Amino acid sequence: MRLFNKRIRMTAILILILSLSPLGSFAGEPISIGTWKTPQTIQPFFYDRFLPESMKSRVFAFTNPADQKTALLAGSLDMCGATIVHAIYSASAGQPVVVVAALCNKSSALVVKKDGPIQSETDLKGKTIGYVPGTMHEILLRETLVRNGISPEKDVTLIRIDFFDMGTALARDSIDAFLSGEPFPTVAVKQGYGRILSYPYFGDSVGTINAGMMVKRSAIEKNPQQVAELVLAHARATKYLTGHPDVWLRRASEFGTPIDVLDAAAPNMELAWEMDNAYIAKAKALGSRMQVLGIIEQQPDYDRLFDLSFVRQAKEKLK
Image (cartoon, rainbow, N blue to C red; front, side, top):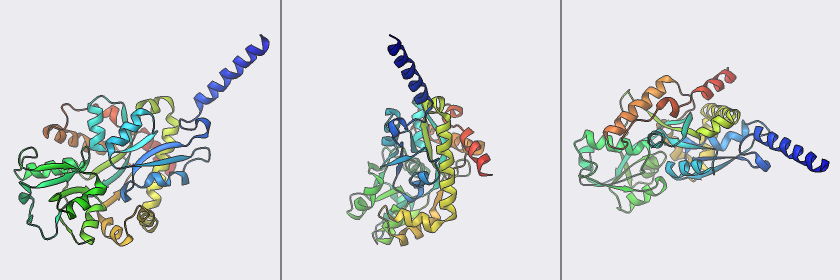
């Protein structure tokens, strides 16, 4: 009985120790991070350079934000990239997601066939356009169409195509245009089948915000220290890559895009990590446009969707 009680006490101590350990480190497992294999979402691939020695990460590449969010909610990921559009959409549906850092800004372009008949945005009427649902690019596309008197539901055919397949679809005439993130617009230009029609962005009320890093609310409640370390690593990775563009683009070229294409696309890409009240105000303006466009039925609680505390902690440590 004494040995039995001793084992119970040891088990209780072990459980306590494990409960205080970072999520994702159970049995030595690395923290799981989701992102895209694009230049503007590359930072997670550099986290291990800036995480404490006791923490390691493993990066999983996805082709769209919805799959990342699904994996996050299922517990397969500890943190993931998410477009601010998809974060707003998820939160408006009551899902327990929290944006803890920015990921990238800018990056969008509207592409058409190089020698095709589309010469202006008004020429998109009646055309087939590729897009990825739940992204800033979708909202920019819908906003562009509406601004030009074109109904997204009645006047065009919108086809869901993953970013990595849009160029092929355009080159084969499966679509007439696509609105996507870099480097795919620049690839279309460099390979000779595409032409950038415009760089659509909202006005100053929304600006060029694009994507952020997201965790589940339970991760913040159960282990805020891990989230803080991840955001700090994200901030350091962003600052490092921004300060070393040669390293940034060389590593991004390993995803399969030539350096000359990345050099040409770089002015339309911006790595990011900082968020503040002005950033949230832009997200609210974006949410309002999403509701007008019928993407969401109600606004989320932005105070719960965005947590600025981890960015503020990172700023203090980076001083």
